[in-house]
Image (cartoon, each protein chain N blue to C red):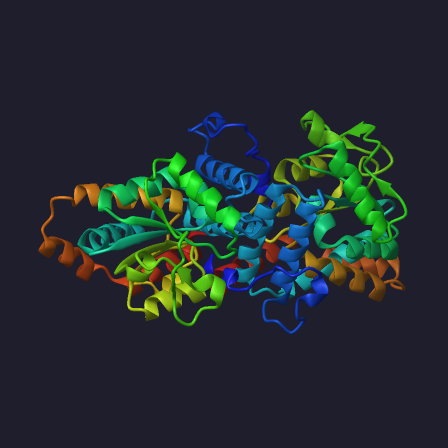
Amino acid sequence: MSEYDTVSAEVEHEEEIPEDHPRYEDLLTRHRIERGVEKGITHLQGMHAEGRGSAFDYLLGEETIPSAVEAERAAAAHLLLADHPVLSINGNVAALVPAEMVELADVVDADLEVNLFNRTPERLEAIADHLREHGAEDVKGLEADARIPRLDHQRAKVDADGIYDADVVVVPLEDGDRAEALAEMGKTEIVIDLNPLSRSPQVAEVPIVDNIIRAVPNITEHARDLADASGEELEAIVKEFDRKRALEAAEERIRSGL
Amino acid sequence: MSEYDTVSAEVEHEEEIPEDHPRYEDLLTRHRIERGVEKGITHLQGMHAEGRGSAFDYLLGEETIPSAVEAERAAAAHLLLADHPVLSINGNVAALVPAEMVELADVVDADLEVNLFNRTPERLEAIADHLREHGAEDVKGLEADARIPRLDHQRAKVDADGIYDADVVVVPLEDGDRAEALAEMGKTEIVIDLNPLSRSPQVAEVPIVDNIIRAVPNITEHARDLADASGEELEAIVKEFDRKRALEAAEERIRSGL
């Protein structure tokens, strides 16, 4: 895709990317994913997936659309109401928003659990280390002492006291099979995905069609804002959110935004 | 993006990908690009660019739309009419369609020239070798004894008896600055790009909005079909092609196809 390639993301440190650059977020994203691949955190396929995401983000106008704001607020309410919220971390999530996920977990008192599509002990460790470098104290996903029903062996692995036990899970950039299986377990799923038509947002209780580097800090901000809200207020926000309308609004924006 | 990730492109050899798989082309593309990165042919950013392309291809319906058929036929006519046609090869092109580019060059009697956004001697050599393994006899781009005006040093390098001298150039997956500079040199540009709004197809005489793995064999087929056509017939095909309508049709398909 030509337009992007005129902008090089090749800087040593992300601080070198000028914040006022019109494509700042895209450059930052590419830079972080590339470093993730180099550090063994992100699978090469993750670079490809991120490219796909960037095309949808481009069509969305590279901004958080109003329906996504509502979804992010509903996500914050769900997380605050949860008995045991868990944030699922894969290689792209770890590369893109490590500090942001640690912060969100802290604000809503959630667990962080590493979960990989291409699971190897090396990548699990690299991601857990990366999260610890960004402030995580407890990282789950290494025990893998429970299984999600109806998934093949590697994809099914979760921690018994993590995702397996969770009532609310945030699964950003999750694959469709796994998102479906988690929904079938009765969990309240919050999915972050830039393609409103892919299966994960379609099966999610709260589909957030937004770039993860915008979405996660937004959820955290809403959670801080709602910290003193009553259970009733939080329930009202959850109830008011219309998942179908949010998906339609995102689709409409992608169509018309072109 | 969830839907894609449920399908693994991780096979040792591309022959292992079942041809009747509903996502065959996408799997093949990802497999070839991943191998390209591993072999030092494709830059890591190329994996990202390919991911973006796959999102647009998904929105196009992953098929060659009628306006692309016309563009591919016009491209064949231009190449057959040319005095000196050159096919430009970058890291993604080399990874995705090496044999197909060699075949097209053979059928229309064009030169192959390596041209890289992230230019290093190692990648130049790796790509030239890769093309030779796929049947190329003469590979240009290594001399770099001429410059495209108004581009920075590295991006400006071309061969004096290659792209610099060409009247018709095929620049698949080209960056916008370079596509613009080549157009300003008065060359007839044939661009293959899945985003109809990016600058390269916008400045091209013949914008082909199609996946390169479909487009190149299609152009070759048209060229074979037109091998005995008269100059007048070829001129008529060139004249009949409406670049603006082709770009609009692609945009319309992406909008409505969602």
